Amino acid sequence: MARSTFRYGSAKGMKALAIMYHDVVEPGAADASGFPGEWANRYKLETGLFEQHLAAIRDALPDRPVDLVDRMEEWRGRRPVFLTFDDGGVSAYTKIADLLEAHGWRGHFFITTDYIGRPHFLTRDQIRTLRQRGHIIGSHSCSHPERMSHCSGPDLRREWNESVKVLAQLLDEPVASASVPGGFYSRKVAEAASEAGIRFLFTSEPTETARTVDECLVLGRYFVQSDTLPETAAGFATGGLMPRYKQAAHWGLSKLVKRSTGEVYFRLKGALFRR
View 1 (cartoon, rainbow, N blue to C red):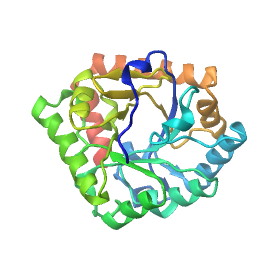
View 2 (cartoon, rainbow, N blue to C red):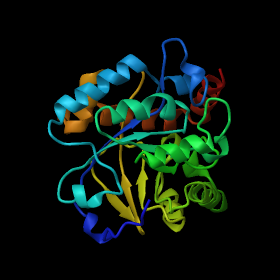
View 3 (cartoon, rainbow, N blue to C red):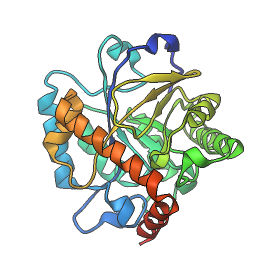
């Protein structure tokens, strides 16, 4: 992915609509791609439902494609729409890419590099092929820490620097995009990402407002779960007020619960993630 010539100070007032997906699986086979466990499976869509999502987004965006961060010349001056996929599960190659390409679209696949080649995750050759087909490959950290915003400075730098290095060597090109695992974003997460050469950083915060941290453009995303309706995804893609405000309210409540329950929340999440 080529380095952007974007002038970061010009991001003031910029808006973007990004949708966060994870894996796409067959009914009853949620553990066949990506991280296993009940918590991770909450974010995986069955194939038929994902196809309905794409059809709804297509119908809601007539005569225009979804956007890619490395084609800024096509979307500057308007509100771009990005489709993103976290974790690096094998369904990116076996299912998602084909379904996107059937619409003439390409996506952003964010890879947890410590898991490359493990069962149910993308292999090195599959990642190369996705890039050759025009999809964006970015970092999702090395190890997918549970709370990235709680990592020390050295650990943050390792998570970004090493993952970017692995992908850049694999693809023989710079890697300038990433997404924050687990939804735990902070300014220091973005600062470390910028130091690693990341120029587009996607968070899990449901917002259309972009901002800059150093030389990194920070973009929010609207998240999809296993029971998200196609019309809701289409609403995210078109900037519909009701689905976006509903999710923003849910996000705010979730943050309140995390703060008020402390470690109890994370112990429960860990137990579900391992099940």
